[in-house]
Image 1 (cartoon, rainbow, N blue to C red):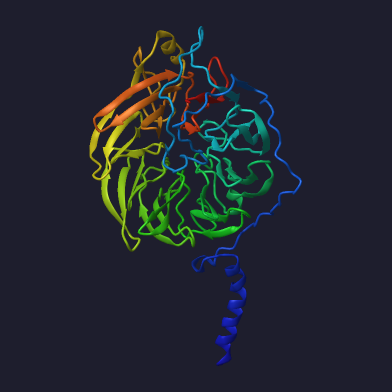
Image 2 (cartoon, rainbow, N blue to C red):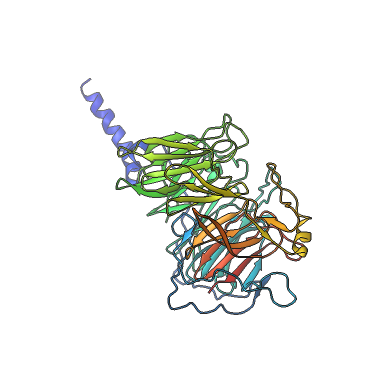
Length: 508
């Protein structure tokens, strides 16, 4: 009898040791990789292909030279280099040149026709990754960020069909780290490529392997890179809400033990109390609807806390990324749930600081500047005090436009959800469900029908520095991207005069 416990312990150690050697945390031993991907080493003789002219591209020439005082940056992932919609770039213009003679819209530096997609491009160095759908394939293309020329392309079949008749292309933005590119399509097909050559290192089918569903709008949250791991909000039935993979080999690192469904918000990582913490705003298609903010140790997958914050409506979802400053996190969602400020204590527990009905984000992640939060609450631009949630001001942002622009906009369809429509009083145009980024002490605002503006936002109010219409097409819901003095805009739907496009504008 005395030997039995010893034999059992030896047997358990024999079974568990291989899992520990694979890097699993002690509290994640129950999670075994359901389908470890095959790794394809990059051939030694493979070379970077030469760029060729994009088959449906236009390029007007070279951009202006950067000024000697300009500071530049990559935009390697969703929400930019700081994961908060801001860029450290300086020395850029706060306007576009007027349209050429006889033209209606300002001329881009270059443009390429794209397929269906809400995915924003990601940029590192002179490489831009465009992720979209052409016919029955999701397509990853590496373009020259300055000319729009094509370096390499990869595609695979997809059958995704949006249940609400929105676009059927990918939603998640690519993530670039070192020389690796990560993309995740609308049906959860995850790929890892070599940035320079397009070589495929590995791939996974997240929805199938972790028993997740497509949700209301397909797989939407973008991949997040944290040191040696790739983090995804998956909402799988096999394991949990969040998965972490080895970013080089694609093998499972850990699965969270929480079972909230996948949201449409991309996770973020921050340092609080001298610890790295992963914040995931979860909650999607589940009945009853559940979700909220998760605080997770990114190394082990251990959940520090789970703070419920979810609309009671079934047809709802959390879609904007958490906003972080100090040891506080602001989360918000539409569908009658609004916003909340949560404070993380020294012992990694959560504390609700305040609830507010002054801000609710449908999908745009608001931007924090100088103690104030700026963002669009549906079609209303809001300035809110960060510490207290006090409303400072709100307004429907509009800009005077000429009669031709008003006429071209009359044929646009109304939004399929909510009471707000695209149509505004004659002579005025609302930005609608717009998006913001921040750079060089100004906000850049893209309206949902193609109106672009530079804004001076402060607690004193909103001043439009300059504005222009780039095109007239609805569902312009992808936020602008800025890198090295060039501004990239997704025209997601065709207009009367142009197909769906990725456009690049020179701000140097």
